Length: 440
Image 1 (cartoon, rainbow, N blue to C red):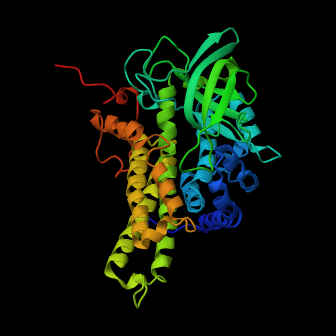
Image 2 (image 1 turned 30 degrees about the vertical axis):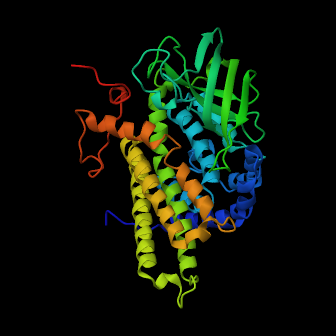
Image 3 (image 1 turned 90 degrees about the vertical axis):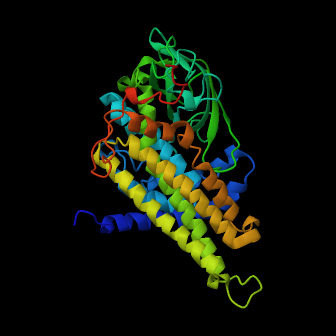
């Protein structure tokens, strides 16, 4: 039959292996690492698990086999990611960002860049190689990440500039929130991909390009941000002060189209964020169900026998199932359409992360006040769930805007996803609702 939700034997093995890693290697370090007050030290506590993930082929599982990666399809990636996210979505985010940083090189880089950069990432004998991705910038007026696609002229939109000076680009400015970029010691990832303004005289979506900045580049400093959730993945503030980067580090196919890179990247990561919500909600649901089957609240029977508890947990279970299959659908669509899914990726991310945030909170209501006792993990589930709608391209600032831009376009076919048709995304679909409509 054309539609079959049965996992293949290889997918079942992948799921089993990912679950073994998550529960056997990652889980024992999560609680203490999450409670470490220093955000960089918290991330560093995951390094042994990351090295094991590297050796197991998890860290670069999304990179094609011809460059030493795992060569997983997006559907397979989603199946494995759920198991890791159920234990800690922050650690999974670290792995996700390896893909955000390297997949654009696979899409748009030169053959030399693909061989050298992807090959180096997947052949590190220490297993510590890590990649950063930096699009986000501090909020402000008129700049800031969410307004990277405003049609307004310079200085609106992204403010980090890269000016060509002989055989190098000189980078100046500040970014805020990018992940992995500081590396294990806060001094830089092995390499990071940044979206910068290579045509500084232009604003909005114009003149944006992607450039690789390697560890040890003078003029680049990092400071780790202290976050409430996803504490086991590192977000940083980055300052560029006349940092000189060789011209060959520009990703040639992105010149002037860094805006499309951002949209394509966050489309790819949409179902990964969606399945992170599934994993977190699954963990909260299973813990709440176990609690309800043993806790009596002073009554004669466990509370699972009460109508409210049973109905609420039944609804939560249904939402988890629905979101899981939506993530599979989105990942399958991206596999089928050359890693493009700007519409379905955004829809999937917004729907799953918001619906399942409510599901996690419902689990806390079932458990009651005991859910806020930190000897349980419900408060962590809630913190992690709260991050998902606002990170990885915020649902309001970026994801819904992409959906809106596609739907408003004259070419939009409302049945395209239903019919598995390719939905294009171009510059003429950007900038919608970023400024007030002109007066007639």
